[in-house]
Length: 172
Image 1: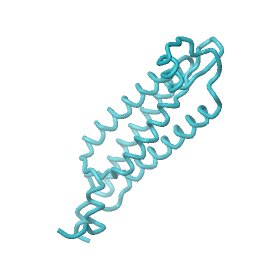
Image 2 (image 1 turned 60 degrees about the vertical axis):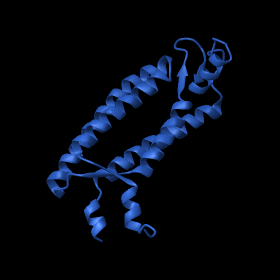
Image 3 (image 1 turned 180 degrees about the vertical axis):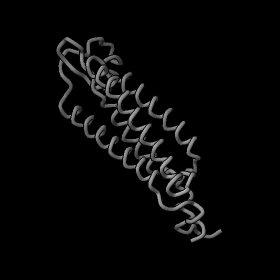
Image 4 (image 1 turned 60 degrees about the horizontal axis):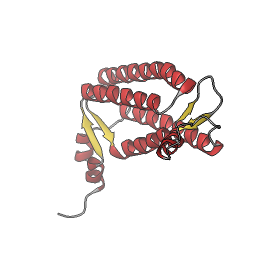
């Protein structure tokens, strides 16, 4: 077998899903992300994630379902093709955001990142609220988190508005 053509390699980099499967997977993924962010934060940050997370998950999920319905009605397309490279990028950005996720000490002074909490407990110390998280770690968190949100939402929009199907790619 010779080298893969551009279209064949494109086919290998995509996952084919039915809309109902995509909705179920998106819902499970959003719940898992939500739980992970709450579990790796603390104090008032966790309360904020809890409150804003419910609103964010609801909005993303409802918009995705409406987008799928509109896609089906307007274009007559049901199948979705999800780029695996996009999925890998989202996963890497999510790991970065989770590692540097910020927590605070509630009504006490101090803040920390998840990685500081892990290392503090690993070293046998219990107190993680003795000081504030280093600024570089806070900047890393917001950089990863903002990038994650932008790439994730842009990818969902691209999935909803994709113009070609795998059949069209194979036939061209």
